[in-house]
Amino acid sequence: MRVLKTTSYDAPRTDGFAFTAENKAKADAYRARYPEGREASAVLWLLYLAQEQNDGWVSNDAIEYVAAELGMAPIRVYEVASFYTMFNLRPVGRYLVQVCRTTSCWMRGSDAITKACLEEAGTASLGEVSDDGVFSVVEVECLGACCNAPMFQVNDRNYFEDLTPESARAVMAKLRAGEEVKPGSQSGRAGSEPQDGAKTLLHLAQSPAPAGEGA
Ligand code: FES
Image: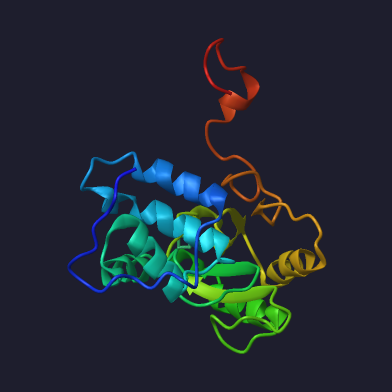
């Protein structure tokens, strides 16, 4: 096993966080993807693992641990974690609701979506964790689903699109109740098709695609 040197700064304090055996094995595999001396290139992978293991946020102890794993100064790991908004530097609810507030979503009512989400969560401000630990709501920049604005993302996976304050509340109520929720458009349209049906390429709907071409 390679020994990483940490000589140009104080040795990181790692007693408050450690990878599980499973995550340690994953971390070792990620680190091995990079040449000797370039282990720091795996920092995003290890931060993701740390955040996943630490209930959705990266604590200072986790940052120090990742630094020790990669032979990096803790401040360099902190710089990465604080630069990318997908890393949370304080505790979050079990469901992190990320409301897009950029142009398309804002013009389509994201302010009202954020307000509804905060009310449904029972929190007074962005980033606050609800008393039951289920929700925290934040605003983020464009998530690339502008054709289905307004929208929010829950945790690191699911997009909920074409929201109204009512449907945003309904999604969150189901999440809180542990019920199944269907990601994607909440208005019933398929993908990003026009709300009232196709307007162009209508002939394609009447003629099957030639063999070998996609649907
Ligand atoms: S502006 Fe909201 S997804 Fe792009």
